[in-house]
Amino acid sequence: MIFKTTREEALQDLENYINKEIVNYSTLRNFDFGPGKRKNVSCLSPYISHRLITEYEVVKKVLSKFSYQKVEKYIQEIFWRVYWKGWLELRPQVWTDFTEDLKGIEEDKNYQIAVSGKTEIQCFNDWVNELKENNYLHNHTRMWFASIWIFTLNLPWQKGAEFFMKYLYDGDAASNTLSWRWVAGLQTKGKHYIAQGWNIAKFTNNKYKNVSLNEDAIPLIDKREYKLSSLEITKEDLKSKTLVFFESELNIETLNLKNYQNIYCVFLSNEKRKIKFDEKVINFKKKIIEDQANRFSNIKIIDEINFDKLTNEIKDLDVIYPSIGENLSFLKSIKKKKNLNYNFIVREGDEFCWQFSNKGYFNFKSNIPKIIQKIT
Image (cartoon, rainbow, N blue to C red; front, side, top):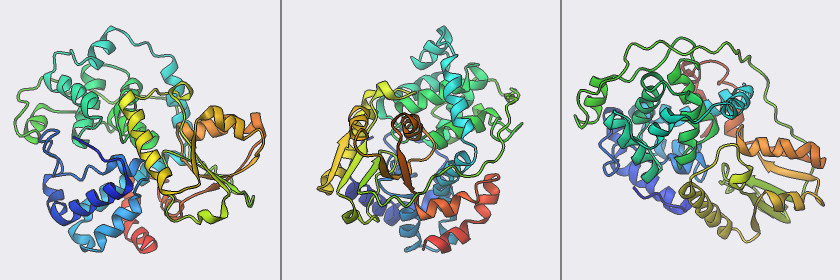
């Protein structure tokens, strides 16, 4: 599988999928035919997770050619990413606890066997190698993988989520962390996802038969409670001449860039990250960042060292809100130290959608028609 690294190419992939394949999505989406046969799904997630193209752009383009009823399932799946982001924004402590938990978990022999793809479960081993080679897994396979990791191999869900974040081109703090919690039975307490041999056989077109798994596992239990909080987004009328954004929010088409004398894309090095990326993931991110920077003459790409130097002189910054995750954690860690003021620019679609993330996805889904009316 080859993923493109420019916005123009991403938009073309979207156009091709809408014109040729989307009509079969609802019936074929759960099948994993292998990395060379992905026409049954759009494979747009690496672009969407970096906001090279946004969820709202995708939805509007799809609905410009089809009625909502014809593409309802696809639209709902696109909005899962928005929902997860909103859910985490309203419960930021989940991300903090996840990254803190990782510090105390040992990478023992069983972990090493799993991440090396040397278990006794052939499909799992193949998926480990596929993930490392292609930096992508089919969504259904991710669920099987996480379930096997947690309930058959008895490994900590946190290390599985970290493993995905290390290798996935489309990994983001919300979708990845919360999906692993959902499989484990922590996201919706008592409701977990169990991978079953018959299901794997059916949806891999019998590539993997008679897979022996623990299909009687009980959900994990975590006594920590996460109460709903208000959005912690500071908005100040700074009228800054400097704009900052990160690789998680690359779509700057809708902003009036003439207002800014200097625009910086901050790309944190692995040394500064709590979860270290695979080299191929770093290179993918660098390429899509460079393409965006080349399209606008006044954008400079800097790392955390040069951001530190920059903020020795500039204390008021407009920042495209990066959402809960590594980048926001970095901004918060340096704010007090450098006495900085951030004016967060939040996408209108995000702010509108996140209010419906206070409960489960069913509540969010029931509001999708209202969301569509708003964004279109």
